[in-house]
Amino acid sequence: MSSKRSRKDANISEGGSSSKRIQLEEDNKVSEDSFLSALNIFILPAGIQKARLTVLKTQVIRYGGRVQDMFDSTQNFSHIIVEDNIDIPRMKRILKLDSALEFTVVKSSWLSLCLRNKKLENCENYQLHEEKKVNLNSPKKEDNVINPYNKSRENASDPVNSSDYESSDENEQNNEKDMTSTLHLKSPQTEKWICAQSSKSPKPNMNKHITDKLEEMVKTYESTNDRWRALGYQKAIQTLRRHPKEISSWEEAKSLPSIGARLADKIWEIAQSGELRKLKEFESSEELQILKMFTNVWGAGPHTAQLWYQQGLRTIADLQQKAHLNHQQKVGVRLYDDFLDRMPREEAAEIEEVVKKAAEGIQPGIIAQTCGSYRRGQSTCGDVDILITHPDGKSHKNVFHKLLANLKESGFLTDDLVSAEETGNQKKYMGVCKLPGQNRKHRRIDVIVVPYNEYGCALVYFTGSAHFNRSLRHLCKKQNMSLNEHALKQGVVRKGSEKIHEGTVVPTPTEESVFKVLKIPYRPPEERDH
DNA sequence: CACAGCGTCCC
DNA sequence: GGGACG
DNA sequence: TGTG
Ligand SMILES: O=c1ccn([C@H]2C[C@H](O)[C@@H](COP(=O)(O)OP(=O)(O)OP(=O)(O)O)O2)c(=O)[nH]1
Ligand SMILES: [Mg+2]
Image (cartoon, rainbow, N blue to C red; front, top):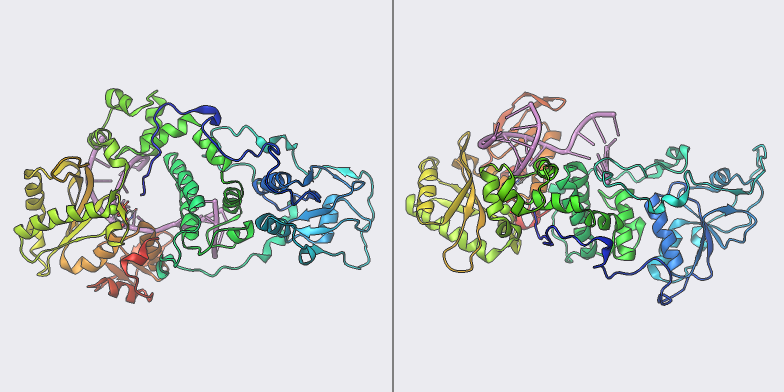
């Protein structure tokens, strides 16, 4: 988990007084260009997500164009904008038109193009032309002023109740019923495995302005126990990170894996306006701010955070005084500030040295290797993950207890979070350490001790990333295998999600061998940073 | 509509 | 067995 | 939240 927190406690300024962004309200100081001033358009909402619609309108207006909310055939529109896979007959059906067209009908991607290039592009290639086919439809004329929206547009800035982040929201409804019939054009997008691709991108994140905001969304959703939504955002962030160029259109975003219409809306909103209204809402919610703060306490998750909030607790100091804390949470509260930020990898290296020395002193020839984000080459580390084993296959056994005792004795380990775990043959410790000297922060440290025959799988597991591991294990499942930190097994039989037969262990002495059995190209740690 | 990883410890 | 964690 |  990355944790760079904008630390502000209970006093959240409401009303966005602190924000200094572009106002979208009206054309204050005649925004740079007005390259769309020739436009007087109507946007057919069918098939266009509500959020994208709003952004389109806002942007057109911002650049001098006019957007009509109602369709009125007596008016002189310069263009009718329709979603890309809507055809003329369908448009006419929706607008209840039966006469020949008097308007220029263009796909919405043209509008995106104009906004992207900040100029009025030629719309020839985006124009829809009427087919010269005999119209068999029984004519049904009548009112030429209709409102194709389902609801009144007042909801454009609906009050968004604060609970809408936990239930999937309503603005899902498409503006037409039979739109499923036109959705078959979606690109098939053959299965790609994250674990079979490198996480390295030739360019450094070209979309940081976007991923930063989405990261905040992830944290909010995680703190409200909306884990699948958080995961959806996280995958989108990974995709954006390795995208070689800055996102410049809604379509570009939507075409990427793990980015659907909802995320494309949000991505494009950020690309266009530099901000995300949904995030602003979240930021102005005192409850959400506090839930985020509480879930940053080690040992507290969404449930506990909610509980504390319901009990009227609002600050970390409140927790210290009034909350019923378990051992882990007491440590989490006491060291709250230290745990908020990540350490430079140089510091992780110092910590590694201390543990290595101690381990070597106890059992010569021992292997102590730092994994996690450190091994993946990240410049900062949330904690230090150290794997210990011994090539002779048995000497690791005695080490665990002695090592911890030794490090506590020297004052290096300051607190235990989870100690004396024993899983199969492996042992795991989670605790807190502090390097000697002034101005040192407490740091999280994890140590696992594993038998040598599990070294390969343990190394893969402990090196991660978490996302990479999930992908790898998912791939195993698809191949009737299973992977955990102990072993890779094949011939696993599952009925639904439950395992019927455990399968047999495939020997995997090295990381390379794990990749080999799975038939994917080997990835060095730096390329597993998904 | 199902699925999105899996194993472990704490309480 | 739910919750939290890596 | 996305994908199949
Ligand atoms: O849900 C998880 C969390 C962690 N791990 C594995 C992979 C990960 O790399 C390793 C260490 O976990 P940690 O939380 O320390 O992640 P990190 O990759 O080291 O990042 P950070 O820099 O935040 O510590 O444990 C998983 O397999 N699944
Ligand atoms: Mg780590």
